[in-house]
Length: 354
Image (cartoon, rainbow, N blue to C red):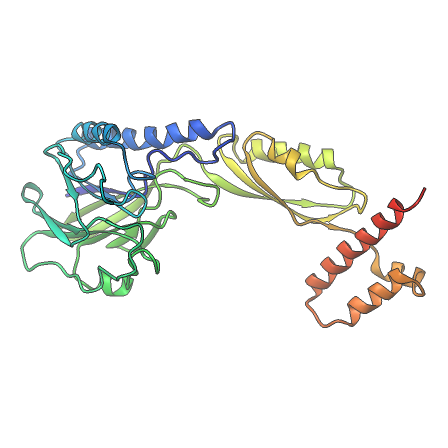
């Protein structure tokens, strides 16, 4: 039996709202999901598992109708899915009473249920969130029934406010596969348990590759692999400054690195190292550059502390350097205090001149 396991689709999300690419990212989330559904139907996948957070928030009725049409087009593949904490089934939810296509099976309550897919000789266990947060460990005591066939658990959560889980206990419960959602970073915990991760990255913290899990179950056991599928990735980009670099040179270097790392991706930029004490990097200007999501400047203004102390032993600057060196602290913290303190002193002194 061949299956794909997806989770955390977040249809309707608008990553990086307000940035030029935000609406395109929203469209890419939908396009990647629907593309995979179409490919699954054509490539002979037997089962599609969707482990929660199909939508970024409780869905509109028209959105459910569109989703249902797309899922129906994946037939003959069977689809089993659940609502997560983002699209939970609250009072008045459009999930309630919705009629799904014949190949679609939706867990519609917070009570554990089981779906028997007779043609696939498969039992799928699961539930849906009816609340935004669930602190009870709903999966802790679950185990498969004593019935012939393959047994799969579909589950969403894993932190203290979203169904805490004892993963080792779940691994030992006897399921052929445990399909997990909620954590956006894909993780294969064992050959029979995995977080699929978000299909597309949803915000700048969702760094790394994103996609889905492909698996096969037969009499020899379960075999799974992660398959990248996202249109683009968020990446952390570290640029090391030196004392000869100007602000314009840093911006030019950032543009070059984006082209090297991939202009289709989006970047969290971290500036490190030392810079000339007279140079200030314009992080707001850098954030306005194409493909840049965030910029954090951790560079330190460079000073020769020993020379400065020898030249200023009898004044405020020398007293400050001496005092900081007398304080017990890690060397990295001492350098930061000295660098920023001296920069403030020099700028203040130059600002009072004239």
